[in-house]
Image 1 (tube, rainbow, N blue to C red):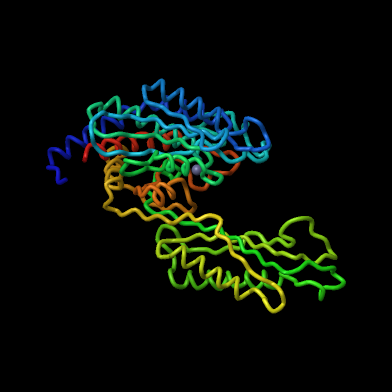
Image 2 (cartoon, rainbow, N blue to C red):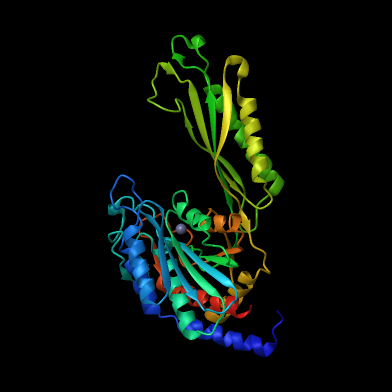
Amino acid sequence: MNAGPRAAAALDARAAAAAAAVDADAVVALAADLVRIPSVWRPEVPGANETAVASFLAGHLRGLGLAVTVAEAAPGRPNVVADWETGRPGRGLILEGHTDVVTEGEPAAWTDPPFAGVVRDGRLYGRGAADMKGGLAAAVGAIDAARRACPDLAGRVRLAAVADEEGLMLGIKALIRAGGAHGFDAAIVCEPEENELCLHQKGALRVLAMFRGRMAHGAMPYAGANPMPSAARFVLALGDEERREQARLGAHRFLGRPYITPTTVRAPAQGTPQFNVMAGEAQVTVDVRTIPGQDHAALVEALRAAAARAAAPDAGVSAAVELVEDRPWTETPADAPVVQALERAVRTALGREPAYGGVPGSTDGTFLHAWAGLPVVTVGPGSRQIPHQADEHVEIAELVAAARLYAAAIVYFLGEA
Ligand SMILES: [Zn+2]
């Protein structure tokens, strides 16, 4: 719609009002509360999952007057969904984040206990402060502010706080399968990206290659078939394939170069290795990171062909390649309404021009785009370098700025329709 300058100015004023309505103290307090509820998934430890943090968050969201549902993606792995339904038809926007965090590692490496949620020197410290309980708290504060400042908007806003992003992304997959992204027009993924707008995200393939020969005594190798030379040829072929792809595509402006990395080589593939036993099976895992311009199906075919060439059928060694996970790269067009809304929101809420970045890993946004067809932009508070490290933290100013940015983006996205 080509709104006139007067309408645009009115919308700017409403977005500014929503940004100003963000309760900064409440955002910081919520982020700290979330950090203080550990949510590292440890299958061997009862209760070490997202249940406690999800039920706390659900209670908080109900307290704000949002319609909340909690559904388990897997036992002990609940997704929390909170909706602001305006009751008027319009666009639908999802603000997305995950409630799980990675392990704190060695507690002694931390200045403060990793789950203390200490606020000091303008920062909130703790596991998940940046990745991404800060982003979740900012999204909650934004929805609350937009709702209070602009109750007459049309459309709907959904907060999706899902489990298991750091694992197999069971949470977002279950949410999409259950129709939780259906009827929405775009998603903002609130991962730590220094509040830069990330329209591009790398893709990933997890590929497992198995070379099967026949086990034998080290003194009589002729009695078996050694799979290891085939595995070695395959590993070297991966380097050739990577160089070809890098030469073909160069470096993406926001994502850098594509990679094909052999991450583990194991022989025997299972069981205890022994000096005098020639393994019957050798397994190679390959972590492939892709950029726009790469065709995942073609890449998998190329790896299958490389494994077949590396095999030695005459010597009794076969090859099999299994695609374990496929996470396509994403590229959101600059003229997508969600991008336009976020660009205007940066100018209005933060008083500066937008900065742009790229997401080097995959996120839940990968599946919101690939499975649910939503345009996604990743933007959130916290340094891109800090996640998964000791003394993880988020700058309070950046955290609050993210909340104001999201609040203004909600108004622009819903208000422009
Ligand atoms: Zn994350």
